[in-house]
Length: 484
Image (cartoon, rainbow, N blue to C red; front, side, top):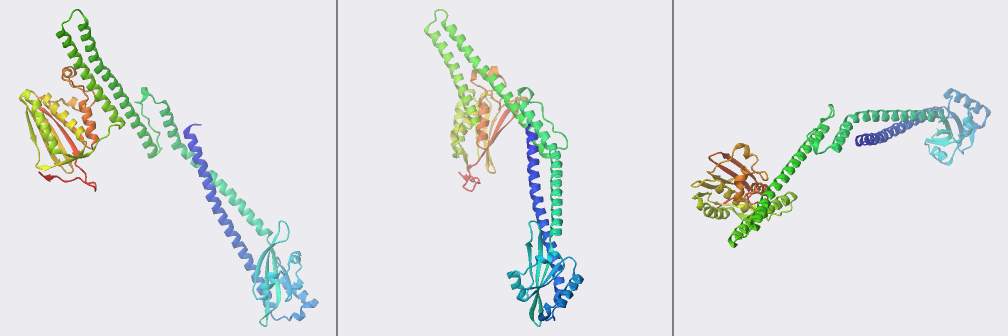
């Protein structure tokens, strides 16, 4: 059975069971209340009849109760007072004196508890079984004359009709409850079809999803609700992300193959040249030096790839600590002047007077800054200028590397941080670039909670801006800068 159908049936079954429980509890309460109310009405009726008898016999002398005329008058009084209840009159000692003509009167007897209540002047109600399936409601009532109990009056009423009515009512409640629960469950089952149908379709879509049909988005049917639309949108976004990952993975594999094939081809070609004919020691040394350079490039490439791979798996721990940004950038400033000297490039440092502390991994951040600084120098013509400009923006430090170099076209700026992306791949090979430096820099900056951006104008230069958080205090806020 499909997943959507299973969920639909399971939810309907649970709802049906819960409805039965709620309706059963409500029906039991209604049945119990009706039973109490019916019995209360019957008790009121018996009590009213008993009071009428007590009023008529309050002045009767117990000594005259044994005469034949007494019982005849009693039966006439019974016929006048009631036609459904059986009545029996007992003496103070509990001896039956007179019984009404209803057969049920023979079932009336004065029990010890009923006699004790009546002797104390209290009415006593009880329900007793007189057969397997028959009950009667019995009232024992005292007849008081001259401020003392003179007789015990007992009335009995069969509960057969009352129990039959209650049984009928109970069957109606059960039938109505089952019908209501079944109808509501059916309506819910039909209504759930609007929601579980799309879920089933999404499940089938996921089962059939492959690399070839990732671009086929799922469109939910109408009237499915915002939840299903949100689920469908989540699936579509996931498919788009997976498609992007696969595309980048294929591109990554292609780039790695290309990057490794070129140095291997050079190594093989130069080695074959070195093995041809007689070569002097100097010629062989040149071949080996060239091979060593290619091996070094391959080593750097493998190291960079390993770092990026570990970064995606979260296997590169960052040793976060307070880092003096002033000292770090001054050190890079002096190193930049040394690197830029052969091209007569001027390196400037523009820094605020405050002492600023970053919360960062010193080695990793230095790697990022050095990469951006060397790139600025590399792509700036002789006699140009490279500026390291940094400032504070709230609880963030902003470091900008500005050059007067060749610049970057806008179409390349959005891909400059992609792996293996180089604007001029053939022109960059001899300088050792692999196209991974900026990708690594971007990951390291983001791993520190910052971001990196580029702004460039072809022929005028480029600016790479980095923002990084300041060192946090124990309460979570940044430590403010202090005067140098």
